[in-house]
Amino acid sequence: MRLRNTILILGIFALPCLKAQTRIYNFYALALTDSVGLTFTILQGPTCAPYEVRRGSDSVTLLPIYTYGDICGSTSFNATYKYTDITPFRGSPNYYQIHIPPNDYSQVLRVDLGFVSNLLIYPQPAETNLSIAIKDQKNYYYEINIYDRFGRKKGFGSGNATDKINLDVSSFAEGVYVFYIVSPTAGSYRGKFLKKPKAY
Image 1 (cartoon, rainbow, N blue to C red):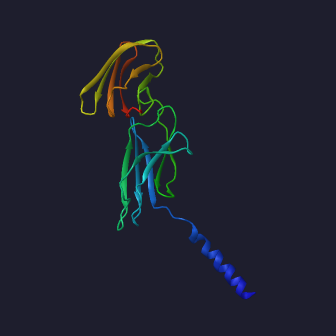
Image 2 (cartoon, rainbow, N blue to C red; image 1 turned 180 degrees about the vertical axis):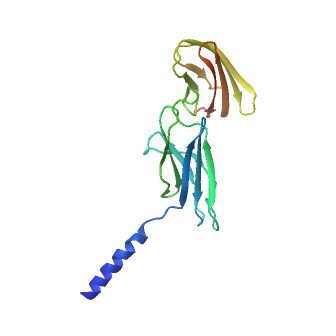
Image 3 (cartoon, rainbow, N blue to C red; image 1 turned 135 degrees about the vertical axis):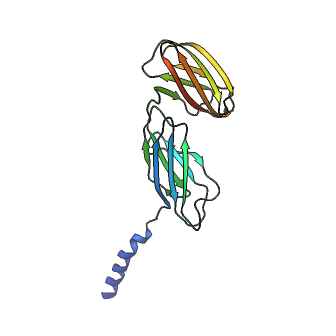
């Protein structure tokens, strides 16, 4: 009987050791003007598979938006990393998580941007079509100029928007673009979008 009690006591004290400890610490998400800045620390330890920044419009369905290199962290010191999501959701919440395969996950953080500078830009990234809505503006004339990340003009458009501006971006190369909208009645606006390769 005494031996059985001893085994039971040892088993109780051993249980906490079975819980996996994450190496992901100090995970922060900050809403910037038109992007979201992420900061996180990987505690020192063994190297591992490439780790991911995951994002979703809800806290359950999170998909990778960026994958880091072939090793994560450092074997001898804690390593802090930063990542800026330049294409966050504007009309819905953004949920972020860091994942080290196979089963190390950070907490999930939520960031809400809503309308940024009174613009709603979707989808992000864009493949063939891009829509831009100006908050509280309908039935207006506009002119739009589009530039690549190096300041080279890549497009121009004008017309009358009923409730949003619709653009065909299928011919644009993959990358980040900045646009400027000028309207006599709706005002002037600046924004950016990410173009992804067209799927075949």
